[in-house]
Length: 356
Image 1 (cartoon, one colour):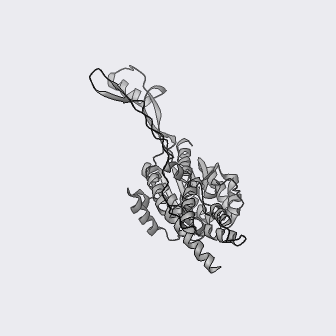
Image 2: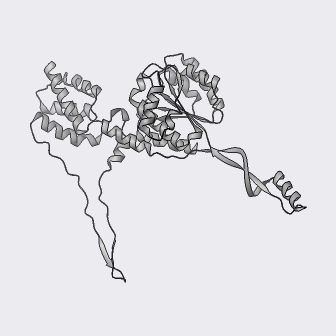
Image 3: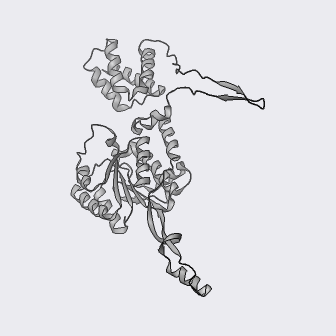
């Protein structure tokens, strides 16, 4: 068994070097599968590894090449990507210049599109860095609300103060002036779970929070939740994402701890207010405190907020069911339960904030 484990570990490291997100859990699943199979039969080993170590269709060609190179000694040649031919038609213009028209772009699969839908917990370091780079460029809009301030308008409610001032200046009421309410971005309050069960997603969620703060600095508040509530809005206002995350790591004292979301929401509602705001809670719902307290505080929060959205990383899987005590207590008070496991999920969440 020790020799088999060493062989599997070497193969998994080969896959990681090739770009396959084969983590420790997947390697353990392969060992469990091989325990019920005949490891001297290549086909059984091949299919056991393919079903346990590959996360998506883009991993299959890499897995095939690595399996052939590792177990049979075949040379792992790079596979060329098939492309369509490019056709150009040139026409002569009246000025003697030649112009190209009807150009056809190569039909290749987009690596970026594949990364958008991958679970960030199963990405390699290079893939996660690319996702973080794309998150830094996220510039979604923000839903607006009516402000108490007014602006001049050609029609609408009468503006009595401006009308009277102009009449006093001219000596008569020459015309009636109008006004309308201005709009401003709706406030967003984001709670990011940094407990141990969310360790694989915490950094990416904080990068998403940094993009929100950079887009609307005055209308975004971010708090980390774990064993205590910590405001990290000021640290996230730094222009550079890396510097901002470094400052955030220094400010958060309860990394990879437990989650007492009910107590922290109660503390927030005592010290602050969410009146008229869009509240986003990014957590997997593993509540160590009293679920009944969480439900009570979420009911108070829902009465204040314009909308309450819960982003759960596990919601991105089809077989997900909210069975934990925290999620069962939270569901009656939520307006939306969305996924929070991939770049595409964060883009969808950004769209919800723009059109809430």
